[in-house]
Length: 308
Image (cartoon, rainbow, N blue to C red; front, side, top):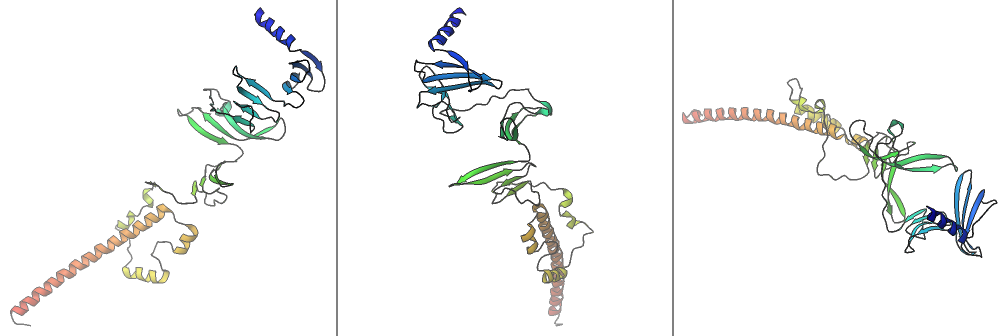
């Protein structure tokens, strides 16, 4: 312990330490590397906290850096308030050079209502001290029902948008609204039918399953009390309306689209009706064949007895 204390004292004396008060930020301490006082590390403090500042000669910068034993830059805070990790020349507010970022999320620590402590918040500031959170990326393990969940959350009904680039422009490729509605190829600025998933484009899939309740399906056609229109009635309806009974006309489809469940049920209804027509026609054909057979038998008897 005495050796550490002695080392600190020697370092302070060697660095030509002195303290005074001026307008920098309250009381401050200056470490100078030589007698010309060009190279300085300034430590100051006031009621708001502690401050660090470094200078390098009259033409130097105020960059604040940490370097390892190989003189490689570990951390940099330059005069433009840009932070570099692994680099001396950060290009953005935060530049990570040749490395990865790992976020370690603690387990089991939450504020009230299950809000997580560990998250990345996206926010804007009105002034120095106030902040409004717009969205956050969260990793939660809040477990009220025995299952964990992971994902994105947002504030103030802002929703989430995902962009891709096209030459020099950005394209809003996918949108998730605050109510859970999802738009692909559309920002859902117009969604009068409140679709949970709206796609402006073609969907390719190996299989799509649509859940249907039994009372919306068309097997009622085979019920004993179902009144099947005659083909004459169907013909007259088509001549008058230019579409099948119970099927929407082209103008309505163009304007309002179709409900896949309803349309599949309607098409099945027509198929089942056609099946009934075919069954009825087959019965009539069999009756005609039987009558024709009897007529031929009578003709043969007449022919045989020279009665024709």
